Length: 543
Image 1 (cartoon, rainbow, N blue to C red):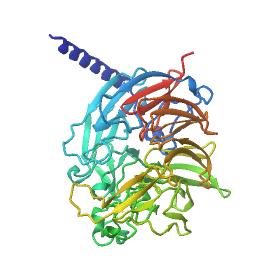
Image 2 (tube, helix red, strand yellow):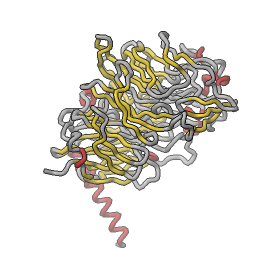
Image 3 (cartoon, rainbow, N blue to C red):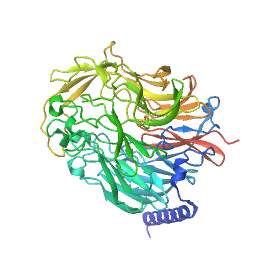
Image 4 (cartoon, rainbow, N blue to C red):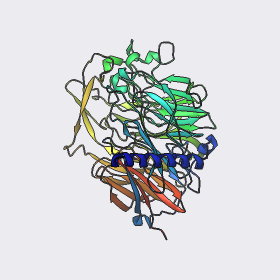
């Protein structure tokens, strides 16, 4: 037997032993486990936002603002791929379950970074997936992991082996449909959304039975002729309305409501192609988790002409507003406004700009933005702030329930927007225009900042400024540490009470759309950071 054959046999043997050990040590994940959120002992991180409310706030306190500068890398894991991470790992029974680009996935030993198994999907060559061949994470229930694919399928994998248990088709990828969202579990169902808004798809949110893979319900984010709201689309424009759903929502089990932000209408920039408010694009929708029926909606940007998807991460929390405790959903929007809404009714409680916004002065008492003239894109171009990447984007914010502060990585920037009429061709990009970033105008500065906001008013409490906009998500801890990153590849830790920088480390690649997670292992608090093509686990030195 030659050397390569021996090496391959050794690798296979190690893999089989690893998966056997994994099958023996695993416990089944219940919905009560997910509902209980992040436990005080740091023993799990079971869903995209750490808990159904997406707060990404850990109760752990071993790492503090005073000792965070002593963190030491414990191990690294390299994907060996070209595309970057945009994922949030799952942590259960001392195992990390991680999705990567091109629908790779791994089960990784949290102690060593060694893989128990690797999954790779065979993808078609003619993918239409917009904006990166990425995946944003697993959901987990029982002994199964759930992920979506770039060719618009939903998969269930055996968590011990990575073997496919079932495979359900969402839609036809060849005409523009894709999926990158991290699913969530609600009442035995796997909740997912579809991407492809720049290809003239008709967006939707789906629920699949976690055991069988059968579709339980579908909510179309662009209402058809039989649905309320179809009259907000002129003529037949609803057929190519976009409104995709590619960022994970939140779930309130007590209200039995799912909350999802919906993408921009299509085509993106050309107004006359789709006159009307264009529901439910650029909205947040609250859906009954059992049936998919709409409970309420709020549209942030009616008839959006600037590609301001509302596909930002919603956060649920309980805060006092005007002397009354309110159950709310908090939402920093790509259009430049921060919003607090009642999560049972959709009542608008707060709407305040958190970056420079030149298209609207404020939100009126009717809940609609009060528009300023001169911000409809044309063939000659019009200048508007924020730019198409928005005041923020899909990278997750965080909320500290102890201090009542909402944190978001914000962007300041403006753009010249252009529009023209475009013929729709199935499977081809359908944007009806384009944009050109403004970089060198001193009157329109271009930078990023981590901003702490009071969700009761939208008031800015402090900011930590980056030289260029950051696309990193956020993580806070009960000890007062907030982790983030910048465009230059620095992992950064701040004091979440003051915004003071406490530590940074050059990761070699930016955290783009990803957030660190934190957990306890063998009595030590770890911080796991996806950056570029690398996972790095950090902890304080052993005592």
